[in-house]
Structures are given as C-alpha cells and as structure tokens.
Image 1: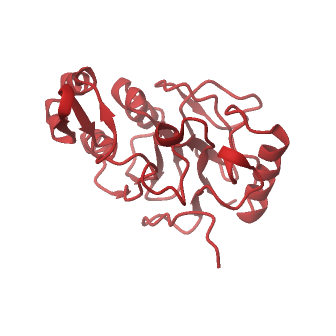
Image 2: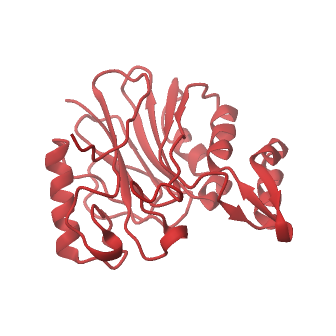
Length: 243
C-alpha cells in the first residue's frame, strides 16, 4: 500500500487527528509532481483544486482546511469561522471539526495539542518566524495548559546553511541556541531548525516533543524542497479533532 503521508506519532487522545503529506499521490505535473497543495507557487489552479479534493477524501476531513497566507511572520489567528485567507503563519482552535493547516517545503511545520485533546494548533516555522516568536505567540494565544508538539518534515541540520547574522540573531534571543549551529567554510553555519524549535518549546515549558526525523532537502522521493529545487510544490500538515 502506498502511503501518501508520513507517520505522525505522538501520544495524543484518539479524537485528535493529524496528517503530514508527502509529494506523491496527486495530479500535478512537472516540478510540482504530484501532490502539490499550494495555489501560490505557479502550479495549475485546477491541479491544486483536484489535489485538495484528494486530500479531503483521502483523510475524510470534516471541513475545508483553514488555509493561511503564510509570510514568515509571527502572526497567529483563531481558525474558528475563518471565511477568507488570513495573513498569518499559525492557527489554533478548541472547536471540533475545524482543520488547522500549514504548507511547507523546507520550513518546519509544528503541530500542537494539549494532553486533554481540547486545544490544537498548526504552526509554520521558518527561521524568521522562530526568531520573531511565532511559536511563543501561538502558545500565548491559547490557555496555559499542558501541550505536546510534533515536528514535521523540514530541511535538516546537515544541509541548511545560513549566514553568521542568523546565528548571531538567535544567540541574542537565547545564548543556548549556539548549540544549534555548526561552522562551515566561508564564515557560514549549518543551522538545525529542529533543535531551535525544541529549545523554544522547552523554554515555554513543553517537554513532550516528538518527530523531527524527516529531511525535506535530502529525501527527494518523498518531499518538496524549495532550497533544493526553487520551483516546486508544497506539502501540508493538518490537525483537527472529532466532533
């Protein structure tokens, strides 16, 4: 059986459902081959619409996902009753049947759920969003309850190269973040975006952190990667709870 998603393994209540798609299983062609779920990357609109219909049917989604206009910000929205596409990089809800969603193709998707299965969130974490507080803002937008987190497919720490200014900015945020950077030639650094997220989550009091084992850049068969291919599609990470 072909799997059109990766395993989302974390100890959430049964009524919480989470999906993180891979690049195959859809109808898009060329550099978007084949399960591209983003409308903003140059793919045929009809192909994306068909892929989104496949998404809804494959996982029997209770409603249309709340799609965001993601801009690498620290803006968070409540997903309840959203009728337009808000400019934000995270959404949350405590309502059943509402599907929080973030698109990605190297940036880190993070799903959050509280241990009682009431509050959920989906967060799009590029390095800019992590630096400026997208995770902290998402957690502040919800009650102070016991959350756990799942880290989805993202560019790995062995290939994500950044400049010294990025490392310095994170060290200004938290000096412990120096451990997430390794020097390479030319005064540049390899950044471990998963480790940066873990440090932020732990600072926020979250100890249950799962996932983080998939690299979008090196796994060409399963994942889109913007840094690897430039023109490419997007996967989606979703979370919702039953009625």
